[in-house]
Each structure stands twice: as C-alpha cells, then as structure tokens.
Amino acid sequence: MHVRSVRVSVPGLIASATLAVSVVACGGGGGTTTTSAPPAETAAPAAAGLRVDAATAGEVMGMVMLDGTAPANAAIRMNADPVCLREAKGPQTQETYVVGDGKALGNVFVYVKDGLGNYVYDTPAEPARIDQKQCRYTPHVLGIRVGQPLEITNSDPTLHNIHAQPTANQEFNTGQPIQGMKMTHTFTAKEVMVPFKCDVHGWMNAFIGVLDHPYFATTGMDGKFSLKTLPPGTYTIEAWHEKLGAQTQQVTIGEKETKEVSFTFKPV
Image (cartoon, rainbow, N blue to C red):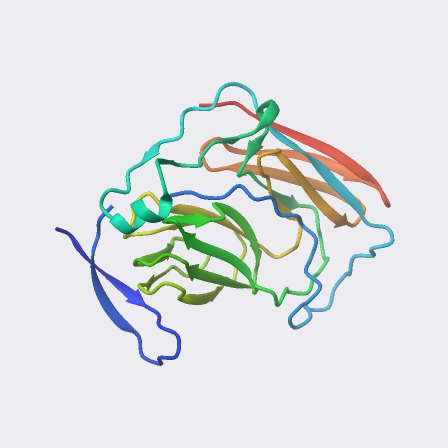
C-alpha cells in the first residue's frame, strides 16, 4: 500500500497537521455555463489605466461545436472508497466530452487572449467556487480572476485533497478530511489552464483559467458563450478543450456592436 503525506488545513487552527492517507484510487464534473459579466461587488480598485465605457461596449458571442462523434468517456471505478460509491449513486463516467443537442460541445473555456491593451479592471471580492461533491470536482472547468479568492469546499463525508499543478502560479496540495471543510486560495498570475487533481481519488480532475480581465466563459450543454461589455477593438478569442486542444479567431467589434464567432472541434 502506498502512503502519501497530505497537508491538512483545518479552520480555526493556526498550526497545520500532516495526515498520512492511503492513496486508493478522485474526475471531472459539471458543465455549467458562466458569463464574463463582472460581479457587482469588488475588492480594491485596480491600478490606474483605461476604463471600459459601458455606453459604447459591445459583445462577442457564439457557439462551440463538435464535428464528428465524440469518443466514449472513460468509466470511473469508485470501488476503493465505499463512501464514493454511496455518494455517487450509480455508475459514473468522466466528463471529458460533454455533447448536447446538435453536437454542441460543453466544458470549453472561451476567453479574450489578446487585444485588450491598457484597460484595467477591479478585482472581484466575491469568490469563485469549486466543490468536491459525490467524489467529483464541480465545476469541471471554470474561470477566475487574478487576485480573486477561490473557495474550495469538501461536501463529501470522506477525505479529499485538492492538488493544483500550475506553472506560472504556486503549486499547492491541501487535504480536507472533514465534510464541510473550506479553504481559500488566491492566484497571483494569469495562466490558462491550471490543472487540479485529487491524489486520494485518482479519477478526480478539474481545470481553472486564471485571467487578469473579466472576458471569459465556460460552455455548457448548449455550447454557447458570451463575452460582454467589451470595448471597441480587435481581439483574439481562444477556445480551449482539455483533449481537443485550442483554437483562435480574430474579431473586430465597433461601438455597441455584437459579433458572433463559432468554433468547431474535430475528435482525435
């Protein structure tokens, strides 16, 4: 049996403890749609720079499609943890390929990759959230701002640990052995994407896009996305999928203009 040391963060305690756990065999989850509209509540204002004029701002919207038949999602075997078997309530598969009506493709992260120039934005004070529920990370793909809190919750009555593996940000690996435990993490640099995994349950994974602006979205089952309140300009829009790679398109919008952009991925 392989034994792994996991740092445990317990609310209300100053010290941290080391918990030895048996690494049994943690995968995807969620296909919720998020939009780029900035939260109403913000933390400290950003540095001085250009501010978006909402009266002249436009929008880039569109869909992400799949051209072909998606490979079958891998089956998840939770036998090593009876709590996971009970909480999941039935057979489970990964959510690598989330395909809706008309071959709409979910779990695609769409964002402005380039073109914003010297615009600056206030950092949201409201946290983004990721949950460990039914032994899955929910959502599976999400976006967050640099400096915005990320609230991580364990909703299961079993040990989870959240292990982030960034390249531009600091790696962290924190255990949450008690149901209802929460922790908060803040990323300091933009990075697309940051992989998350659970070392306790090997099937659990998620991806987080960290950006210094609010123009990003994750497609749901309908494949749709919307990047609102964009100032007039020319932008490179990127669509990212964990297995199918990334595609980019350039789009120019004028004052109060809405442009549509579509992406089509082919299975590999």
